[in-house]
Amino acid sequence: MDLLDGIATTRAIRRYRPDPIPDEDLATLLWHATRAPSGSNRQPTRFLVLRDGPKAREAKAILGRAFREGWGAKRTDHDFDKGSGADPVSPKARAARAMQVFVDRFEQTPVVVLACIQRWRRPHISEGGSVYPACQNLLLAARALGYGGVLSMWHSFVEDELRKVLAIPDEVVIAATITLGVPEGRHGPVRRLPLREVVYDDEWGAGTAWALDPPDTRFSRAGPAREAR
Amino acid sequence: MDLLDGIATTRAIRRYRPDPIPDEDLATLLWHATRAPSGSNRQPTRFLVLRDGPKAREAKAILGRAFREGWGAKRTDHDFDKGSGADPVSPKARAARAMQVFVDRFEQTPVVVLACIQRWRRPHISEGGSVYPACQNLLLAARALGYGGVLSMWHSFVEDELRKVLAIPDEVVIAATITLGVPEGRHGPVRRLPLREVVYDDEWGAGTAWALDPPDTRFSRAGPAREAR
Image 1 (tube, chains in turn brown, red):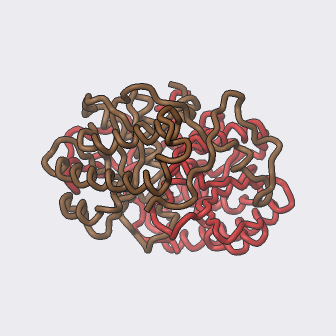
Image 2 (cartoon, rainbow over the protein chains, first blue to last red):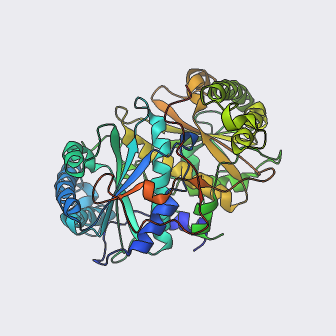
Image 3 (cartoon, each protein chain N blue to C red):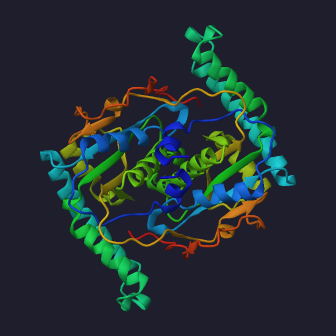
Protein backbone atom coordinates (compact mmCIF):
# COMPACT_ATOMS: atom_id res chain seq x y z
CA MET A 1 0.00 0.00 0.00
CA ASP A 2 1.16 3.50 -0.90
CA LEU A 3 2.29 5.72 1.98
CA LEU A 4 0.04 8.68 1.17
CA ASP A 5 -2.94 6.41 0.40
CA GLY A 6 -2.42 4.63 3.71
CA ILE A 7 -2.36 7.91 5.64
CA ALA A 8 -5.45 9.14 3.78
CA THR A 9 -7.56 6.02 4.35
CA THR A 10 -6.67 4.98 7.90
CA ARG A 11 -9.79 5.54 9.97
CA ALA A 12 -11.08 4.41 13.36
CA ILE A 13 -12.14 0.74 13.14
CA ARG A 14 -14.25 -0.49 16.04
CA ARG A 15 -15.84 -3.68 14.66
CA TYR A 16 -13.56 -6.69 14.45
CA ARG A 17 -13.84 -10.23 13.22
CA PRO A 18 -12.93 -12.79 15.89
CA ASP A 19 -9.69 -13.72 14.08
CA PRO A 20 -6.56 -13.36 16.22
CA ILE A 21 -3.52 -11.36 15.07
CA PRO A 22 -0.59 -13.76 14.57
CA ASP A 23 2.51 -13.07 16.68
CA GLU A 24 4.64 -12.15 13.68
CA ASP A 25 2.11 -9.56 12.50
CA LEU A 26 1.87 -8.12 15.97
CA ALA A 27 5.66 -7.83 16.11
CA THR A 28 5.61 -6.06 12.73
CA LEU A 29 2.98 -3.59 13.94
CA LEU A 30 4.86 -2.82 17.14
CA TRP A 31 8.21 -2.56 15.40
CA HIS A 32 6.78 0.09 13.08
CA ALA A 33 5.18 1.85 16.04
CA THR A 34 8.58 2.14 17.68
CA ARG A 35 10.16 3.82 14.63
CA ALA A 36 8.30 6.99 15.69
CA PRO A 37 10.29 9.84 17.19
CA SER A 38 10.45 10.81 20.86
CA GLY A 39 12.04 13.74 22.64
CA SER A 40 15.84 13.28 22.70
CA ASN A 41 15.14 9.75 21.37
CA ARG A 42 14.39 8.94 25.02
CA GLN A 43 11.86 6.25 23.98
CA PRO A 44 9.75 6.36 27.15
CA THR A 45 6.86 4.35 25.66
CA ARG A 46 6.15 0.76 26.63
CA PHE A 47 3.52 -1.33 24.88
CA LEU A 48 1.57 -3.69 27.09
CA VAL A 49 -0.19 -6.27 24.90
CA LEU A 50 -3.43 -7.79 26.17
CA ARG A 51 -4.74 -10.91 24.41
CA ASP A 52 -5.89 -14.11 26.10
CA GLY A 53 -3.52 -14.38 29.05
CA PRO A 54 -4.91 -14.49 32.59
CA LYS A 55 -4.05 -10.86 33.38
CA ALA A 56 -5.23 -9.74 29.96
CA ARG A 57 -8.67 -11.26 30.52
CA GLU A 58 -8.95 -9.54 33.86
CA ALA A 59 -7.78 -6.22 32.42
CA LYS A 60 -10.13 -6.50 29.42
CA ALA A 61 -13.08 -7.04 31.77
CA ILE A 62 -12.13 -3.89 33.71
CA LEU A 63 -11.70 -1.94 30.49
CA GLY A 64 -14.96 -3.27 29.05
CA ARG A 65 -16.83 -1.94 32.05
CA ALA A 66 -15.10 1.45 31.75
CA PHE A 67 -15.79 1.67 28.02
CA ARG A 68 -19.49 0.84 28.46
CA GLU A 69 -19.74 3.44 31.19
CA GLY A 70 -17.83 6.02 29.13
CA TRP A 71 -19.94 5.45 26.04
CA GLY A 72 -23.18 5.44 28.05
CA ALA A 73 -22.35 8.87 29.43
CA LYS A 74 -21.20 10.23 26.08
CA ARG A 75 -24.31 8.91 24.30
CA THR A 76 -26.43 11.01 26.63
CA ASP A 77 -24.17 14.04 26.98
CA HIS A 78 -23.61 14.42 23.24
CA ASP A 79 -27.30 13.83 22.42
CA PHE A 80 -26.60 10.85 20.20
CA ASP A 81 -30.26 9.79 20.27
CA LYS A 82 -31.70 13.25 19.63
CA GLY A 83 -31.93 15.47 16.56
CA SER A 84 -30.76 13.58 13.47
CA GLY A 85 -29.83 10.71 15.81
CA ALA A 86 -33.53 9.82 16.14
CA ASP A 87 -33.45 8.71 12.49
CA PRO A 88 -31.93 5.20 12.43
CA VAL A 89 -30.32 5.70 9.00
CA SER A 90 -28.59 8.98 9.94
CA PRO A 91 -24.79 8.98 10.24
CA LYS A 92 -25.23 9.90 13.92
CA ALA A 93 -27.43 6.87 14.63
CA ARG A 94 -25.07 4.60 12.72
CA ALA A 95 -22.09 5.94 14.69
CA ALA A 96 -24.00 5.30 17.92
CA ARG A 97 -24.78 1.70 16.94
CA ALA A 98 -21.13 1.06 16.01
CA MET A 99 -19.99 2.47 19.35
CA GLN A 100 -22.52 0.33 21.23
CA VAL A 101 -21.30 -2.84 19.50
CA PHE A 102 -17.68 -1.82 20.18
CA VAL A 103 -18.18 -1.45 23.92
CA ASP A 104 -20.58 -4.41 24.26
CA ARG A 105 -18.01 -6.71 22.64
CA PHE A 106 -14.96 -5.10 24.21
CA GLU A 107 -13.81 -8.29 25.96
CA GLN A 108 -13.74 -10.09 22.58
CA THR A 109 -11.40 -7.52 21.00
CA PRO A 110 -8.58 -9.65 19.55
CA VAL A 111 -5.75 -7.39 20.74
CA VAL A 112 -5.71 -4.48 23.17
CA VAL A 113 -2.46 -2.52 23.44
CA LEU A 114 -1.93 -0.14 26.33
CA ALA A 115 0.56 2.53 25.23
CA CYS A 116 2.24 3.54 28.48
CA ILE A 117 4.73 6.32 29.08
CA GLN A 118 7.43 6.32 31.71
CA ARG A 119 7.28 9.83 33.06
CA TRP A 120 10.65 11.57 33.27
CA ARG A 121 9.49 14.97 34.52
CA ARG A 122 6.31 16.68 35.63
CA PRO A 123 3.29 16.40 33.32
CA HIS A 124 3.36 18.72 30.28
CA ILE A 125 1.58 18.50 26.93
CA SER A 126 4.90 17.91 25.17
CA GLU A 127 5.29 14.45 26.74
CA GLY A 128 2.49 13.35 24.42
CA GLY A 129 4.93 14.03 21.57
CA SER A 130 6.92 11.03 22.80
CA VAL A 131 4.05 8.53 22.75
CA TYR A 132 1.22 9.47 20.36
CA PRO A 133 3.34 9.50 17.18
CA ALA A 134 4.08 5.83 17.96
CA CYS A 135 0.35 5.16 18.41
CA GLN A 136 -0.34 6.68 15.00
CA ASN A 137 2.43 4.57 13.43
CA LEU A 138 0.82 1.50 15.01
CA LEU A 139 -2.56 2.31 13.47
CA LEU A 140 -1.00 3.02 10.07
CA ALA A 141 1.01 -0.20 10.14
CA ALA A 142 -2.20 -2.05 11.06
CA ARG A 143 -3.80 -0.59 7.93
CA ALA A 144 -0.87 -1.83 5.84
CA LEU A 145 -1.38 -5.40 7.09
CA GLY A 146 -5.17 -5.42 6.72
CA TYR A 147 -5.99 -4.73 10.35
CA GLY A 148 -7.78 -1.79 11.89
CA GLY A 149 -8.01 -0.17 15.26
CA VAL A 150 -8.83 2.87 17.30
CA LEU A 151 -7.22 5.03 19.96
CA SER A 152 -9.38 5.39 23.07
CA MET A 153 -9.01 7.15 26.40
CA TRP A 154 -11.69 5.53 28.57
CA HIS A 155 -9.04 3.55 30.48
CA SER A 156 -8.67 6.76 32.49
CA PHE A 157 -11.77 5.85 34.55
CA VAL A 158 -10.11 2.64 35.76
CA GLU A 159 -6.42 3.41 35.57
CA ASP A 160 -5.77 2.56 39.22
CA GLU A 161 -7.48 -0.84 38.92
CA LEU A 162 -5.52 -1.62 35.75
CA ARG A 163 -2.29 -0.54 37.38
CA LYS A 164 -2.90 -3.07 40.16
CA VAL A 165 -3.91 -6.01 37.95
CA LEU A 166 -1.13 -5.46 35.41
CA ALA A 167 1.60 -4.43 37.89
CA ILE A 168 2.11 -1.06 36.19
CA PRO A 169 4.47 1.08 38.31
CA ASP A 170 3.41 4.41 39.79
CA GLU A 171 5.61 6.58 37.57
CA VAL A 172 4.05 5.10 34.43
CA VAL A 173 0.98 6.66 32.81
CA ILE A 174 -1.37 4.85 30.45
CA ALA A 175 -1.46 7.24 27.50
CA ALA A 176 -3.82 5.32 25.23
CA THR A 177 -5.81 2.13 24.81
CA ILE A 178 -5.49 0.84 21.25
CA THR A 179 -7.83 -1.94 20.11
CA LEU A 180 -6.81 -3.96 17.06
CA GLY A 181 -8.32 -6.64 14.89
CA VAL A 182 -9.44 -7.63 11.40
CA PRO A 183 -12.14 -5.14 10.33
CA GLU A 184 -15.68 -6.50 10.12
CA GLY A 185 -18.19 -5.10 7.66
CA ARG A 186 -17.96 -1.83 5.77
CA HIS A 187 -16.50 1.37 7.13
CA GLY A 188 -17.15 4.89 5.87
CA PRO A 189 -14.53 7.36 4.63
CA VAL A 190 -12.38 9.64 6.77
CA ARG A 191 -14.23 12.93 7.26
CA ARG A 192 -12.54 16.09 8.45
CA LEU A 193 -12.98 19.84 8.52
CA PRO A 194 -12.09 21.68 5.31
CA LEU A 195 -8.35 22.33 5.27
CA ARG A 196 -8.79 26.09 5.07
CA GLU A 197 -10.55 26.05 8.46
CA VAL A 198 -7.56 24.53 10.24
CA VAL A 199 -4.55 26.01 8.42
CA TYR A 200 -3.42 29.58 9.01
CA ASP A 201 -0.63 31.37 7.15
CA ASP A 202 1.73 33.82 8.85
CA GLU A 203 -0.62 34.66 11.74
CA TRP A 204 -3.37 33.05 13.82
CA GLY A 205 -6.68 33.07 11.95
CA ALA A 206 -5.13 34.30 8.69
CA GLY A 207 -6.72 32.51 5.74
CA THR A 208 -4.83 30.71 3.02
CA ALA A 209 -5.69 30.65 -0.68
CA TRP A 210 -3.50 27.60 -1.21
CA ALA A 211 -4.79 25.19 1.49
CA LEU A 212 -7.16 23.32 -0.82
CA ASP A 213 -8.70 19.89 -0.24
CA PRO A 214 -8.50 17.34 -3.08
CA PRO A 215 -11.81 17.20 -5.03
CA ASP A 216 -13.12 13.95 -3.53
CA THR A 217 -12.54 14.93 0.12
CA ARG A 218 -15.39 14.13 2.52
CA PHE A 219 -16.03 16.73 5.18
CA SER A 220 -17.21 16.67 8.79
CA ARG A 221 -18.29 19.34 11.19
CA ALA A 222 -16.10 19.99 14.19
CA GLY A 223 -16.64 17.51 16.98
CA PRO A 224 -18.24 18.52 20.27
CA ALA A 225 -16.42 21.30 22.06
CA ARG A 226 -17.20 19.89 25.49
CA GLU A 227 -16.06 16.66 27.05
CA ALA A 228 -18.23 13.58 27.44
CA ARG A 229 -17.17 13.27 31.06
CA MET B 1 6.63 4.87 -1.52
CA ASP B 2 5.32 1.87 0.39
CA LEU B 3 3.46 2.58 3.64
CA LEU B 4 5.53 0.28 5.86
CA ASP B 5 8.80 1.41 4.24
CA GLY B 6 7.82 5.04 4.78
CA ILE B 7 7.07 4.44 8.46
CA ALA B 8 10.34 2.53 8.89
CA THR B 9 12.56 5.14 7.25
CA THR B 10 11.10 8.44 8.42
CA ARG B 11 13.68 9.98 10.71
CA ALA B 12 14.39 13.41 12.16
CA ILE B 13 15.81 15.65 9.41
CA ARG B 14 17.43 18.86 10.66
CA ARG B 15 19.54 19.96 7.67
CA TYR B 16 17.64 21.49 4.76
CA ARG B 17 18.50 22.80 1.34
CA PRO B 18 17.32 26.39 0.81
CA ASP B 19 14.59 25.27 -1.65
CA PRO B 20 11.09 26.40 -0.68
CA ILE B 21 8.17 23.96 -0.45
CA PRO B 22 5.60 24.81 -3.16
CA ASP B 23 2.10 25.71 -1.95
CA GLU B 24 0.53 22.62 -3.49
CA ASP B 25 2.99 20.32 -1.73
CA LEU B 26 2.42 22.10 1.56
CA ALA B 27 -1.34 21.67 1.10
CA THR B 28 -0.79 17.95 0.44
CA LEU B 29 1.31 17.58 3.59
CA LEU B 30 -1.22 19.39 5.76
CA TRP B 31 -4.19 17.57 4.24
CA HIS B 32 -2.58 14.25 5.15
CA ALA B 33 -1.75 15.56 8.62
CA THR B 34 -5.43 16.31 9.18
CA ARG B 35 -6.52 12.76 8.29
CA ALA B 36 -5.22 11.76 11.74
CA PRO B 37 -7.72 10.91 14.47
CA SER B 38 -8.69 13.12 17.41
CA GLY B 39 -10.86 12.50 20.45
CA SER B 40 -14.55 12.48 19.38
CA ASN B 41 -13.27 13.75 15.98
CA ARG B 42 -13.17 17.13 17.73
CA GLN B 43 -10.25 18.27 15.52
CA PRO B 44 -8.83 20.84 17.93
CA THR B 45 -5.53 21.23 16.05
CA ARG B 46 -4.69 24.32 14.01
CA PHE B 47 -1.56 24.53 11.86
CA LEU B 48 0.13 27.90 11.77
CA VAL B 49 2.50 28.02 8.80
CA LEU B 50 5.57 30.25 9.04
CA ARG B 51 7.48 30.97 5.83
CA ASP B 52 8.56 34.41 4.60
CA GLY B 53 5.70 36.64 5.72
CA PRO B 54 6.36 39.56 8.06
CA LYS B 55 5.03 37.79 11.18
CA ALA B 56 6.76 34.58 10.18
CA ARG B 57 10.15 36.29 10.03
CA GLU B 58 9.61 37.80 13.44
CA ALA B 59 8.44 34.48 14.88
CA LYS B 60 11.34 32.57 13.32
CA ALA B 61 13.80 34.99 14.91
CA ILE B 62 12.21 34.43 18.32
CA LEU B 63 12.24 30.66 17.78
CA GLY B 64 15.83 30.70 16.53
CA ARG B 65 16.93 32.37 19.74
CA ALA B 66 14.99 29.81 21.83
CA PHE B 67 16.38 26.86 19.87
CA ARG B 68 19.97 28.09 20.22
CA GLU B 69 19.45 28.58 23.93
CA GLY B 70 17.76 25.18 24.28
CA TRP B 71 20.46 23.35 22.39
CA GLY B 72 23.23 25.21 24.23
CA ALA B 73 21.83 24.02 27.56
CA LYS B 74 21.25 20.48 26.34
CA ARG B 75 24.75 20.26 24.86
CA THR B 76 26.17 20.93 28.30
CA ASP B 77 23.61 19.06 30.42
CA HIS B 78 23.77 15.89 28.33
CA ASP B 79 27.59 16.00 28.09
CA PHE B 80 27.61 16.10 24.28
CA ASP B 81 31.27 17.19 24.25
CA LYS B 82 32.49 14.64 26.80
CA GLY B 83 33.13 10.90 26.68
CA SER B 84 32.79 9.59 23.12
CA GLY B 85 31.66 13.11 22.15
CA ALA B 86 35.29 14.29 22.40
CA ASP B 87 36.05 12.18 19.31
CA PRO B 88 34.88 14.20 16.28
CA VAL B 89 33.94 11.10 14.27
CA SER B 90 31.78 9.57 17.02
CA PRO B 91 27.99 9.44 16.47
CA LYS B 92 27.62 11.73 19.50
CA ALA B 93 29.91 14.41 18.03
CA ARG B 94 28.19 14.14 14.66
CA ALA B 95 24.78 14.51 16.31
CA ALA B 96 26.04 17.59 18.15
CA ARG B 97 27.33 19.18 14.93
CA ALA B 98 24.01 18.53 13.16
CA MET B 99 22.10 20.09 16.06
CA GLN B 100 24.40 23.11 16.04
CA VAL B 101 23.83 23.69 12.31
CA PHE B 102 20.08 23.22 12.80
CA VAL B 103 19.80 25.91 15.46
CA ASP B 104 22.35 28.27 13.86
CA ARG B 105 20.39 28.23 10.59
CA PHE B 106 16.95 28.13 12.20
CA GLU B 107 15.76 31.38 10.56
CA GLN B 108 16.54 29.91 7.12
CA THR B 109 14.32 26.85 7.68
CA PRO B 110 12.05 26.81 4.60
CA VAL B 111 8.85 26.03 6.51
CA VAL B 112 8.07 26.07 10.21
CA VAL B 113 4.67 24.74 11.24
CA LEU B 114 3.35 25.40 14.73
CA ALA B 115 0.89 22.65 15.62
CA CYS B 116 -1.49 24.36 18.05
CA ILE B 117 -4.30 22.83 20.06
CA GLN B 118 -7.45 24.59 21.12
CA ARG B 119 -7.91 23.44 24.68
CA TRP B 120 -11.40 22.18 25.48
CA ARG B 121 -10.84 21.11 29.10
CA ARG B 122 -8.12 21.19 31.72
CA PRO B 123 -4.67 19.87 30.68
CA HIS B 124 -4.38 16.06 30.60
CA ILE B 125 -1.95 13.78 28.76
CA SER B 126 -4.79 12.48 26.59
CA GLU B 127 -5.16 15.85 24.79
CA GLY B 128 -1.86 15.02 23.08
CA GLY B 129 -3.73 12.15 21.41
CA SER B 130 -5.65 14.80 19.44
CA VAL B 131 -2.59 16.61 18.06
CA TYR B 132 0.54 14.45 17.88
CA PRO B 133 -0.92 11.78 15.56
CA ALA B 134 -1.45 14.62 13.06
CA CYS B 135 2.17 15.74 13.57
CA GLN B 136 3.37 12.23 12.78
CA ASN B 137 1.18 12.08 9.66
CA LEU B 138 2.74 15.39 8.58
CA LEU B 139 6.26 14.01 8.93
CA LEU B 140 5.33 10.79 7.11
CA ALA B 141 3.66 12.70 4.27
CA ALA B 142 6.78 14.87 4.04
CA ARG B 143 8.82 11.71 3.58
CA ALA B 144 6.49 10.59 0.78
CA LEU B 145 7.07 13.85 -1.11
CA GLY B 146 10.84 13.93 -0.60
CA TYR B 147 10.88 16.37 2.29
CA GLY B 148 12.05 15.88 5.84
CA GLY B 149 11.45 17.47 9.20
CA VAL B 150 11.57 17.20 12.93
CA LEU B 151 9.27 17.74 15.89
CA SER B 152 10.73 20.12 18.47
CA MET B 153 9.55 21.54 21.78
CA TRP B 154 11.90 24.48 22.38
CA HIS B 155 9.11 26.94 21.49
CA SER B 156 8.07 26.45 25.10
CA PHE B 157 10.78 28.89 26.27
CA VAL B 158 9.22 31.69 24.21
CA GLU B 159 5.57 30.70 23.95
CA ASP B 160 4.31 34.00 25.39
CA GLU B 161 6.36 36.05 22.92
CA LEU B 162 5.15 33.93 20.01
CA ARG B 163 1.59 34.21 21.21
CA LYS B 164 1.86 38.00 21.06
CA VAL B 165 3.55 38.24 17.65
CA LEU B 166 1.28 35.67 16.00
CA ALA B 167 -1.98 36.69 17.74
CA ILE B 168 -2.44 33.20 19.21
CA PRO B 169 -5.38 33.25 21.67
CA ASP B 170 -4.93 32.40 25.35
CA GLU B 171 -6.85 29.10 25.24
CA VAL B 172 -4.57 27.78 22.51
CA VAL B 173 -1.40 25.84 23.32
CA ILE B 174 1.53 25.39 20.97
CA ALA B 175 1.97 21.62 21.04
CA ALA B 176 4.90 21.30 18.62
CA THR B 177 7.22 23.17 16.32
CA ILE B 178 7.74 21.22 13.11
CA THR B 179 10.49 22.31 10.74
CA LEU B 180 10.30 21.13 7.14
CA GLY B 181 12.45 21.31 4.02
CA VAL B 182 14.30 19.34 1.38
CA PRO B 183 16.92 17.19 3.18
CA GLU B 184 20.53 18.22 2.70
CA GLY B 185 23.34 15.68 2.79
CA ARG B 186 23.18 12.14 4.11
CA HIS B 187 21.19 11.03 7.11
CA GLY B 188 21.73 7.91 9.18
CA PRO B 189 19.19 5.15 9.82
CA VAL B 190 16.46 5.16 12.45
CA ARG B 191 17.86 3.65 15.65
CA ARG B 192 15.67 2.40 18.47
CA LEU B 193 15.75 0.13 21.50
CA PRO B 194 15.33 -3.59 20.79
CA LEU B 195 11.62 -4.37 20.53
CA ARG B 196 11.74 -6.85 23.39
CA GLU B 197 12.80 -4.07 25.75
CA VAL B 198 9.67 -2.02 25.07
CA VAL B 199 6.96 -4.64 24.52
CA TYR B 200 5.39 -6.54 27.40
CA ASP B 201 2.87 -9.37 27.11
CA ASP B 202 -0.01 -9.82 29.56
CA GLU B 203 1.66 -7.91 32.43
CA TRP B 204 4.07 -5.03 32.99
CA GLY B 205 7.66 -6.17 32.52
CA ALA B 206 6.68 -9.60 31.19
CA GLY B 207 8.98 -10.59 28.34
CA THR B 208 7.86 -11.73 24.93
CA ALA B 209 9.41 -14.46 22.82
CA TRP B 210 7.67 -13.15 19.70
CA ALA B 211 8.62 -9.45 19.74
CA LEU B 212 11.56 -9.82 17.36
CA ASP B 213 13.28 -7.06 15.38
CA PRO B 214 13.87 -7.65 11.66
CA PRO B 215 17.48 -8.78 11.01
CA ASP B 216 18.79 -5.43 9.69
CA THR B 217 17.42 -3.30 12.53
CA ARG B 218 19.81 -0.66 13.93
CA PHE B 219 19.67 -0.20 17.66
CA SER B 220 20.11 2.72 20.05
CA ARG B 221 20.42 2.98 23.76
CA ALA B 222 17.64 4.69 25.65
CA GLY B 223 17.91 8.45 25.58
CA PRO B 224 18.72 10.51 28.65
CA ALA B 225 16.31 9.99 31.51
CA ARG B 226 16.51 13.58 32.63
CA GLU B 227 15.41 16.69 30.83
CA ALA B 228 17.79 19.14 29.18
CA ARG B 229 16.05 22.02 30.86
